[in-house]
Image 1 (spheres, rainbow, N blue to C red):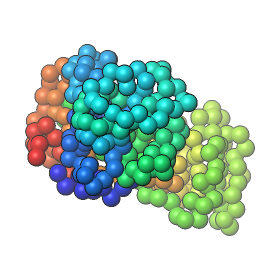
Image 2 (cartoon, helix red, strand yellow):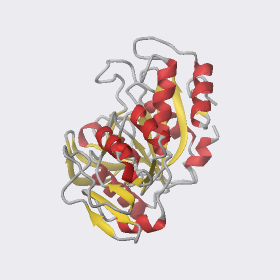
Image 3 (tube, helix red, strand yellow):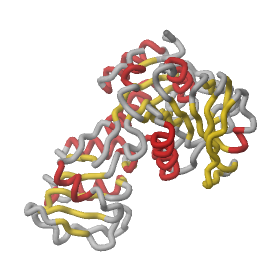
Length: 337
């Protein structure tokens, strides 16, 4: 697949499933089988538990993770003991997960492994930096976890692959619409350089920049505050939400005539928790949403089969989704190459 070469342009990749059983682990398996381990140093970990043969929630069969000789990996102590490969132990972290400390090792033979690495975005970033600095890793691959899009944050990884499918929705039109909404968020444009420099250090609250370039704090309000007011914001050109962007706040901004021309800025797409309906209304009314950080969306993959056995037509799904998002869409099981 062409996107394997695209992956190698970046130093980190997150693979994120929009729902369980959308083919995320199959995508990881596909990528690992095709990367040039002879010329690139590859490390892999998971922000959740991955590699188990049976899904712990749906009880459906899952593909195991097979690592190739020379690959580095991070997993919990509990799962390291269950490995089915020969490995060189490199490090045991001081940070613990629910399954013990994170163990870092290098595969000396090919074999199967259960992945359950760092449990938070911050600890994941530390692990990645350590791998790059100490071992010269060229590419870190992160297997994301259900409903934990933080692993795909641009603050963590430079690039990403989205896995979607019938488990996300058994209705093809709904599946296409919901996936296209996520892609729209991932692909939001960066704000301008001035805003990047001023807003990047701010990680709490609501802020705005006026027409003279002055930065102001909206007291102790957040986008989740019940009684949000926009008084004293004359000349507001940029409104920055440092935390989560939610439906109620977006609606208030949309309905406020004085903010009609404002640019709404969030840290990255993982901070946006708005429905497709509210998002479309905001954009349709001329609203602009920009981000401080963004990842490169390399590919979208589909699993047309749901855990209940319902099957969508793969060719039709790929074609309709590709048309909606303007990117190639791959069924990796059907089109293995």
